[in-house]
Length: 496
Image 1 (cartoon, one colour):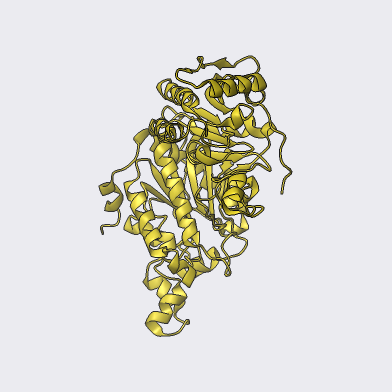
Image 2: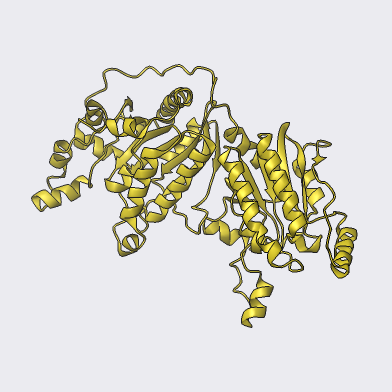
């Protein structure tokens, strides 16, 4: 566990993140009408202590030369608590950022609702959330840096709605503050739960980083999120190898299972121009069998959802958590207007009591529903094994690309053999009869194009990944110009 961080003032963090001399405040003096003398004295003392006139500072500046809006909490002002005046200031800034089309950077730090104002302050969470929702509905990025501490109504509203959420090392982050818990229940809150590191382990935040690294990660994220959607320089169509060798079906299946076959991590390492890994569902779940990221191939940005063969093991096959994490990526693509890239490479979804209790079948259905209705361009890459519903959940797309030895089957061929022949010996025969190969799927119109393996991706991992990357770059650039397909268009490829 990281030590408790030394707390930076709002102005200090602003100076650390923004380009020197670029900060312009949007704040106006807070309205103190109707404030009691006792509360007025507290507010005056808080201002003298903090040097700020409220618990939130708002404004704009340049970050690596890019204009951004900023809303920043100030803990020294009444523990960063949110009252009506600070809520009004926060909402005004969010709405201005939306009107002016600016990405919004938020740095909450707070004990929550201001107790001196009670319920009238408490219900401002609704207005703040509505303002953030409108900003995101406009397709504008909202990036959050959770600082020490962030609790209560702040964490339960604008602290938990980021497209990308990073937390300060050692920060106390949670809903109910530990002091309140102990007062209510007469015992201390369990240690190690309300920490940035635990939230990362649980898939609630995307990264844990010190303030000194925030400008760099936010700038890289915005390079992808704000990349042009139109007018990208034309990307030449990589010349496919023609004709492709007619590799026998079972040979292709066997090759796809080689442990040294490149997966999504090597694909991104060799082929992507930039990658920002994301983490988990944001709702307390993560699965090592899924890689979720913001990525660029050349100049073309995307949300990337890849089944990670390295993270799927016999002890931990791909579970329903992975599909819920995938749905987060689908929502991100729709909110931000980015193309979605899904990658199929799985031995199959988990078959277990835990998976059933987690609603595996329903999560497959929800992935299919999201993909066929998504209001963003979609591209599926069949990279390796494609077993069962766990693979199908990533298939529907406007364009489908397949590695030469990739395949898709209702069950592993051995499972199909067990059902039909009551043995495993007929697996090669079942694979052939079920037409699982990428070549067979292309003849059916399910796959649009095939990337050659020369002779096998495992024998030429870097060259193969770069070929795939060139195809992805070309396809994504074209899809950004064309836009998303309709539900009817996406379903049509399966009518044969």
